[in-house]
Length: 243
Image 1 (cartoon, rainbow, N blue to C red):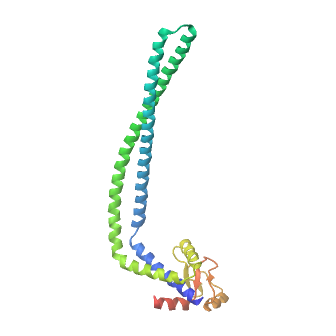
Image 2 (image 1 turned 90 degrees about the vertical axis):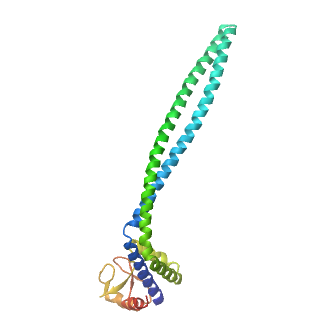
Image 3 (image 1 turned 60 degrees about the vertical axis):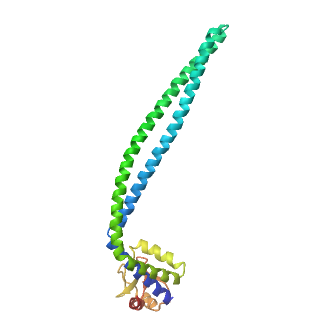
């Protein structure tokens, strides 16, 4: 267990150093990520408008085809009116004519509505495309800034990342996720040393009996107040010398 405690505290030191390097970049990583999300949303909006246009084209073309068919039928019915033999046939043709005329009217309304929808969507795409061009231009500038800042710390980050991987490989698989959860919940500090009989994270006092147990380095102890993993001062000092 002593070796595990040393590895956990070593991992915490490495992660803290990585956090410090990340802080040097300021809010640029978050800004870039937010801008990427915004650009992605605009792209999705454009795709949605393009889908609307595609559907409208399909609807308009179908309406246009149906209009032509009904107009042909209408001409046929009107020509047949001159050769009807009785009122029953005349009434039947009149109903067909009325139905064809109403269908043409409805389909023309559908045709015009589709055209209008397409026009609106095309205008919206033009606006969205302009917005996207501006967003991508600004994003490229921010990415360049971030790349410049990252370049200054790249070597050290790679070195620390390599150290981190080596430490994680030596820890039990169930301990690392636990460490990560605490770290996320406690502003990056998952493992802290005991200092002056107090938790190095929340600074609450630790009972004397627990201090003695901690110094034995035989078990994983958590702070009763903040839930961080506690290590003895001796562990902390031995790790700090070797990191």
